[in-house]
Image (cartoon, rainbow, N blue to C red; front, top):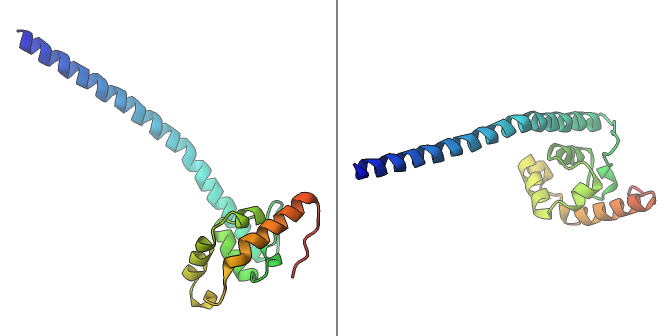
Length: 137
């Protein structure tokens, strides 16, 4: 009788653990369902910024990457598509990531070297933060 009682107690303990884990999973799924619309909205906003900048409209908070030597309209668009919207974003983007972006865009971009882009962007951002007006090259 004691063995059955012990087995029953062990089983009940396992059921309680599974139920607790199930509640945690349910809370995680609820949180995920809250975050999914935000991620979709961020993707949509990025798409809108890409389209606007492609036709020459620059929304507030979006910097002009053509002020960086070596970046023209098409590379600026690639940056926007990659989620790089400001000089500060560019300054914080590793050169290797920028190079991968160019490589993925095809052979047309093989001649471009982004080694100095983050430093140029950092200087532009610092100038903007200080109130200085950057001069496009």
